[in-house]
Image (cartoon, rainbow, N blue to C red; front, side, top):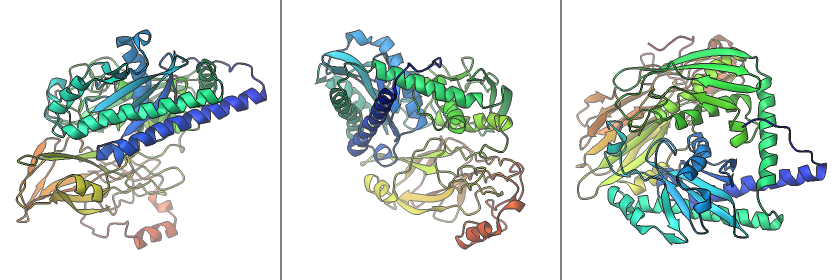
Length: 562
């Protein structure tokens, strides 16, 4: 969206529009909180794996809830317009609701459902409420990167009406439930999305009544003009030029490369990912919409974090790639664990920006959103989804945050809840000492988690699809040390240890447990410059690894992890 000068307004009009803008954000927060209250899945209700937003009548995102993840919010910013191409706005009536889990229209894999509700005021379509959340199981081979195509990953719902004229589409819900290992939860989460949109619509209608707004057009124009102007001003403060960065990930059977060329010019940022690895026959491919969501988030977080996120501020950052790459996978590529690539993209962008504004960009983060996808067969089948979090990279003026899901912002399901909804027992969940890279400012720590079946005679199935950075840790910045890579293993009852080295499927036999240590964040600045009192505090709190033979020993200098 082109940045334009805001329309001429007197002070009173500006104040009034700004108040309505903030009220609009509050509407989105109420919408998101409604979803948190009524969601069935623990990963939504407890971890906040969701998004919510309000859109104008053209399908452009005006505001988003603070609660939620960039992968959901920034893909949803494109989803509404994309869905309206399939079901035109003029065909919608009061009481209609649209839904899809198409990865190329929504949030990048079939586990994320997008629900869009048209909002009518005085019988006129004035906008849309949209929300997204993760449904634990939608059939197929489940949460796994083993699928050879999206057809094997579960049931895919094209853009269709979840509700028509106020009447729920029970046939659609029965199809979803029939394909899910947790049918009650799958059905409940989809209805929860519809319910939270209804709450958001009521709040929006009340806001329009209060301010006597016949439509959202003038407010949308104000929001978009101010946001684009502020974002452009922030970009213009950067040195113009071209900057390149590369990163290597473990990949599946072999490493994959991510390559970015960033051009900063004329108040815009354009990124090409053309040199990245081609798509593969495993489910870590990333649709371009999800790639754009996380790459643009990394740029905006560093350059224009003070500007609200909407269609206009997002429009000044363009991210593209030729079709068929790991970052621009085409239908029907498998995409279940697309966040393996997506989570690495903000750091790829920050590596470019660090060349433009040296000394002002944080070190690499773990980019680790290790999904603990554990299931069990037999008379009482279950599917449990939790998240193990890595360390955030050290900042130019502070240590990195530990066990923090940067860039996603998602949380983890509390142990007490995870053990209640599935027959599992968490034996350990604690910081991983020494996993953060040393530096003037230390990288955030990863965590150690050990989980087993609650019943001694029960076997478990694990998908390690999201276990990334097992070979190379997050890079330090400005002379800081790399963070420690992750580790994962199955610990058998007799003392045997089985390392997990790939993203495959693993059997955890009766009596055995899963043990993981997530990666740490990179350090910032030379370790010799760390304040003595900061090192003493780390030692006092047990954050340094005292074992000289440990693979997580805090390293005093930079350099790649062997």
